Image 1: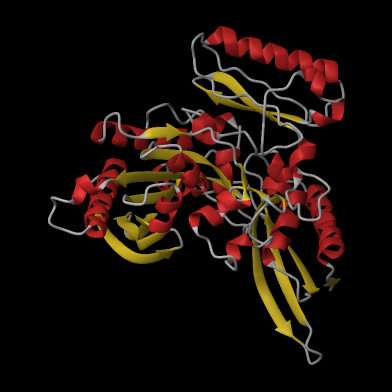
Image 2: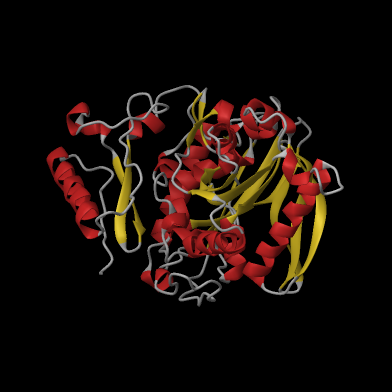
Length: 446
């Protein structure tokens, strides 16, 4: 079957055309694979925390802003989001259009995409070693409550991850999830004892080849009851920690082959004890994942007072970049067939062959900072102007003068992965970046 393709113009003003195209898309879903469980296709209601099915008559033209497609088994699926519900005029909202445009793309559900291939390889490991045990969730909404994202997994009230500098807030009580752990309490309370959750997560971050404000995680949880460890001759925590390490060492061997491993003690708010697993791969130590024995308070709140559990979380991009030799995290988002055609369903570890290396263009920008300045805010502005044409932002100089004013100078690397950029394009981008920095960060340009 030929790959389905649907591209909707975000700025489309013709509602009738949009409705026709969406109805055509829905018909394609129904006719192409009868009986397939497509999952929910939701148009967000005015209260996005309580989505429900709506008819087209419930929407005005300007509310249907973006239909976001993704491909699964060469068939198009999609979720619709109303722009006004995610990027809205709320003093606590800090979600830019560039982040909204990523909602619903769900790269991890594309079987021929490196992230989907990796996800399915992990599924294969759990299906083989724990048959019919683990429930799998890969379509849960990334729009979650502050309570689910932070409180339910015991993130302290003063933790830096709660700040507007680090997290995308839809409003004061709603965020774009920072981690797939945001669904832990919900699933535990719903009676699930073995589960894997995969999804897109969102964090305001720096700009370089390994960091992107949207990436993908997988969370794994296994719950044990007293009957599981009572006859083991060891205490519950030691029993569960040993089971966790055995499971994840097996997963590392499944993905990377016969590699050397080591466990590092770590800290996470939601597990105790906590560990990081590292492997020696390609002549260096690589962090694979974080994990630990779940804090008892999380289980108690879910009605599992006598139980104990382990949990792990891993970043799909981090592992996929190593397994597939992908040098730049932006490539995961490209639709360039020179990239997408290199990967096939079920083919883990096929090495990416670079199809181009266009030259970078460097531009510097310097300014006197204020006390409120943060690099994450700067990077957000630059991404908002240049999108994926910005490759890296680096602080190359800073000093404080006799008056106590501090100056920062940043070098911006512009580079397209698909074509050469012209001088006029770069100059226009840099001019708009300067304008936005001065206007939004309230700094004094130099």
